Amino acid sequence: MATTDFKVIPDDNELDRLKRDLEFHPADPAKAKTLSAEQVATYNEKGFVRRFVVYEPAQAQEIRSYFDRLLEKTVASGGNSYSISTAHMKYAGVFDILTNPVIVNHVADLLGDDVVAWGSHFFCKMPGDGRAVAWHQDASYWPLSPSHAVTVWLAIDDADLDNGCMKFIAGSHHSGHLTYRKSSPEEHNVLDQTVENAESFGPIVIDDLKAGEASIHNDLLLHGSEPNMSTRRRCGLTLRYAAASVRAGMNWNEKGVVVRGSDPSGHWKNPARPEVY
Image (cartoon, rainbow, N blue to C red; front, side, top):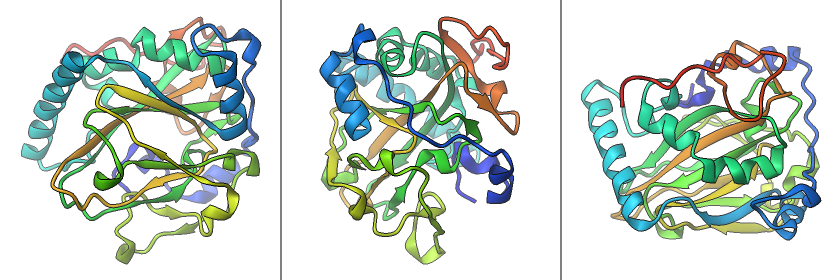
């Protein structure tokens, strides 16, 4: 089982029993406040929002140093560069990034007035890592319904083709939930699912980012990345958000922090900021 936010899912049968609504829910360009109406329309069409600045270079350097300390602590306790998962429940510094108004303002234009943040996971490819992230849809791993959720990918390091930046299949979120196969160990996949013939669902878009920049993609959008065979590290922090009206199975609602508006149903547990930085 992959070392990710997804690892708590025991098997595909349990996800199937949830009878999830896995259809794309478009955003309303007319209601956008931070993104332009054109950016929201592009998100609806292509499934992603390209780069925007969250942290200026000096701030990005501070966050990189913070991650370096977390990684050193994690490795010392027996983990690896992919092990820092659900980090907002453990570390106040990650909680602060997850709830950053700059990020939340962009996300709210896509998800609506009531938003929860429920996931935070560092995907860190060390130099010469050699592991790919095969084409996949986030929704295949998440016990959420309806499918009204996004991932923000925040670059901790500069990410480009040389060190294995993320790639999107534009428009693939309109194809619904796609069939996948389990990856074999020989594939050296960071995760454990592979969608075959992904390029048949749309053109490939390179999501290269400078440290401190971020992109947003829909939970049904096909995406992946090549191995990092360079001499540079490639770390990104994935931040997961959903409309507060989304229901979570398997107790995943315990991770959800209300970051915009409210959750009238009280479904999401809205944990407090951790004390440990």
